[in-house]
Length: 304
Image (cartoon, rainbow, N blue to C red):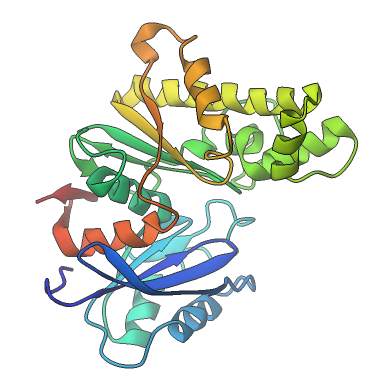
C-alpha cells in the first residue's frame, strides 16, 4: 500500500519485550510511545496491545515491523523464546480488522535495514547488510537496491546460520546458531558459565574492560563468530558494507574489535564494518519509508 504524501504513517515496531508506536511524516517520528509486549502466546493479545497505542481518529496508513517470520501477512516465531505466538497468526488481517486499514507488515530487521539503506549507514551502496546484535541477532539485506524478504520471509536471518555445529540447542530448533554464540543472551549465559557467577552482557563487557581475561575471551569468541558470519554472507551475496547495531553491537569497542578481526580474513572477504546510523527506532522509520516510497513485487521491496 502507498500512503498519501501529506499524511503521517502510523508505524509500529513489535519486539520481544516491547511494542513501540509513532507517527512518521517526512522521515520524522513524533508521539513515540511504547508498552510491554504481551507474552501470553496469543496473537489477539498482541493486537490488543497495539490498538491501545493507537490514538483515536482516522488512521490513513499503517506500517508494522515485527520480530519473527512474516509471510503473506501472517506471523510465525522463528524462535518462540523471543516472541511466543501461534504459528501463522494472521497479524495483518487482525490489525486491519481492529484499525480499519490494511497494514504493510515486514520483519523488524528487514525494516531497519531499509532505513539504514535509505537514510543511514547504507546510503551510497547497492548491496548492503544491516545486523543488529542485541538480545538476539537480526539481519536485513539489500541487494541491487532491493530489500530481500524471500519466499517465506526468511531472508537475512543470519542469526540462525550455524556457527558451532555441535553447540547448544537454539530456540529455532537447530544447534549452534550464531545467536547461541554472539547474542546478548548468549554472552550472558556463556559468561556466567565461564565466570562461575551470574552476569549480564553489560556486566561481562564491564569485566572485560577491567582486565578480566575470561570475560574478554567470551567476547572475543562472539567477535570471531560474527566476522565469520559476515564473511559467509559476503561470499553468498557480495555485500558492499555491513552496518552493526544493537546493545551488544554498539557496546564500547565492539565494532572496533569486529573491524580488527575482519582484517585477518582473506582480502576478498573483507568489507567495511560500520556503526548503524538510523537510530534505535530504525524499525519504525524503515517500515514507514516502505509504505511511503516503495513498491512491492516478487516478494521483495524495490526502490522506485
